[in-house]
Picture 1 (cartoon, rainbow, N blue to C red):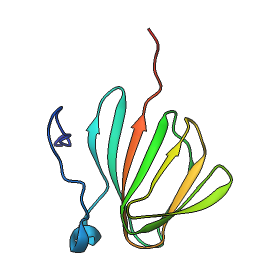
Picture 2: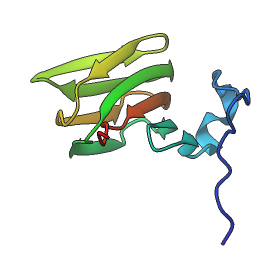
Picture 3: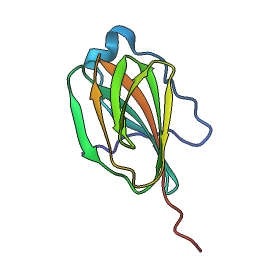
Length: 113
């Protein structure tokens, strides 16, 4: 099994709209360290990621399409160019309203010294 290639420090990678390639694209981790994880999340229209939580802070940027994001007791619509921040451990779910691509950054909690 081949390891997934992640970006190296200083490497430039493209997060622009996938356009016609969106339907054939998969979710993939772009970069991962002990401190952060950056994921391009591809979410087809109608698909839902049920309520879950992550231990770190999350930043969700909509690259293209539209999603319904539920967190902090509210449903919010994210569309291209919009960003949402959530604190650590906050339960959330997301549903594709259109075929969509999101840039998800997870900032892992500090382990202390």
